Image (cartoon, rainbow, N blue to C red; front, side, top):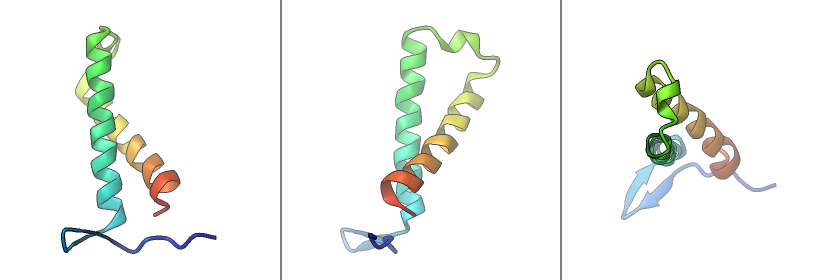
Length: 70
């Protein structure tokens, strides 16, 4: 069993694992949003900014659970 990280040290600054997962989740949601806009799939959503927010939450939970293990 691997130990859960308590914090990440980046340049001497300690960051909680959930903040790192949220950063990667936001990045993944922005990339997904740009792909949806590029292929004109966002026109099928009623309110696309809410979809981006929802994707951010979903990606943050998935990254925090399966990649970081927070």
